[in-house]
Length: 377
Image (cartoon, rainbow, N blue to C red):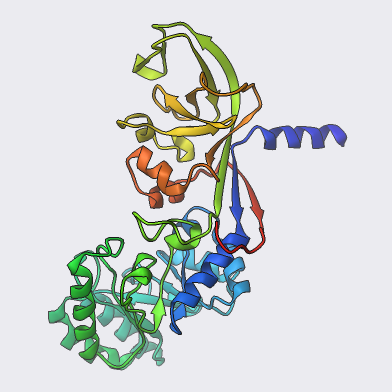
């Protein structure tokens, strides 16, 4: 038995480790709920709660008092329902043709963004003899999903067969606080809502909640900020850090000047260098683009920032540890944590923090912790 436990510990130690601070997550939701100025603060938990695990994340938010959640797909909603037994769950990607019966059976609310969807939902409700709830998605400039202004009269007529639960739209550029289109979208949304039956309204995502004169309406839908992403790019992050990620050093070697490292020999040692290979690659969501940009990704090892050299491969990456303190096989290096934030890693990889979060790998050992509340990070 002791040998089995030792083997289990060894396997866990050899994995990259993702730490999710549910205490910080809960505090981020409380901060956002306070900011909402009386509007309901929901939570967007699509994409497996942005890669952090929909069940533990949802449970932490439920414990804080969150009553409404948004996901993208019915399958996500059904998973969420196993934890959130009484919560309202909205399905953002709308109504799949022929799937209307799935929603009331799990008490899910579709977000309808086209006349065909609304017509199908109205027909289903009429045949079922029940005015099941649905949200209405209005396009105010994204041109992705949602009703156009010309669709509103017909949509209103079709709504007589069901219960309109929420009118919503989506900001195009809310992270740009000075973008004139933000105000134009608010105006378009207000005009559209005036043409529909009375119902609660929702426009603010994470960044939208930090706009000057933020249009909180009746409900806000933060996602990224809950998980520690910065909703105010260019300014200090008002949210607490939620995610930590470390990888294990598998091997350390010295290479002479002129030797190369990684696929296609894209990096050449400018002088004698010491390299560490870590157990993290693009199969784990450590993006290959992080080794292709002009800056390149860095990790934090033995008190110093150390660059990735050569191409990030599927399961492994190579780190130049020449300028840091002693690093040996079995040591851990920080990928995300106190010294490297989500947004910083994303910038180095030439992407956005949303992609970093949602692509966090399933091969990680996952540790859920609950830190204490703190005034600032």
